[in-house]
Amino acid sequence: MSLAALPLFMRLAGRPVMLIGEDEGKRRLLERAGARIVGEEAEAVLAIVAVADPEPVVERLRARGLLVNTVDRSELCDFTLPAIVDRDPVLVAVGTGGASAGLAAALRQRIEALLPASLGELAWALGLAKARMRERWPDTAARREALGAALAEGGMLDPLKEHGQASVALWLAAPDAAPASQLLRFAIAPDPDDLTLRAARALAAAARVFHRADVPQAILERARADAPRIACDAPPADPGPGLSVDLEMAR
Image (cartoon, rainbow, N blue to C red; front, side, top):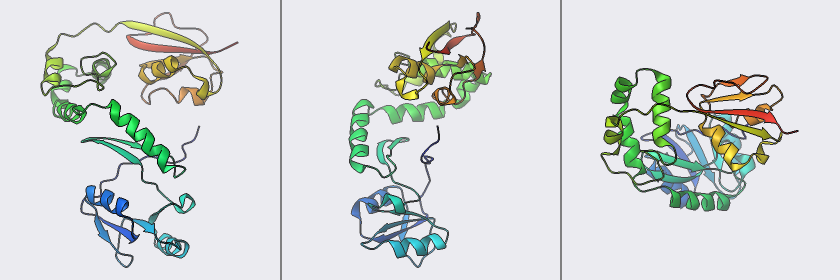
């Protein structure tokens, strides 16, 4: 399954961005990102076009090698600007490839209601604790497993719960729990859209994915990026510590 676009977070503080025409919403967004707004004659890293007849402007800018966003003209966009949930330093971006800004805004509002105000505080605390985490869990896999368990639903650092400033320190001071071995098995249809919510969540959280050879790649791509995909003819007798998922095609 290919991506319609690659989501990126670009640092614009102090960098020149063209804004051609008038769009107060785009101007405010650029100012919040710290961009230096310039006109068409200047050098820039990106351009936003908000004029009634954008085609010749877009053609000129693309000839200069600029990536262009054209307001309300998705077919003239090299990039789009998503709806944003800001829990500094956590940013959640929702895009529809220019298909519907209203849909992106509605999804942003729903997501914003789910995320506690303290989420940014948790992120900063985790960033400051990286050295302590490496010291406690020198092995990368063990560190990832411990952090994943803490951030899981109901975990000590569940990101959808409110957390105080001391939450990360309390987690680091807590004794290690032995990682339990859990294998969840699913018989699936070939279309990723037919995955149950439970199967989709398990794939996103699993440390490894076992699967039969005929499981489509589009399904395997729903697993987290760092989880190994292990082709096998039968479910494993010893899947290893933490959560594993075993997939076979429904008959």
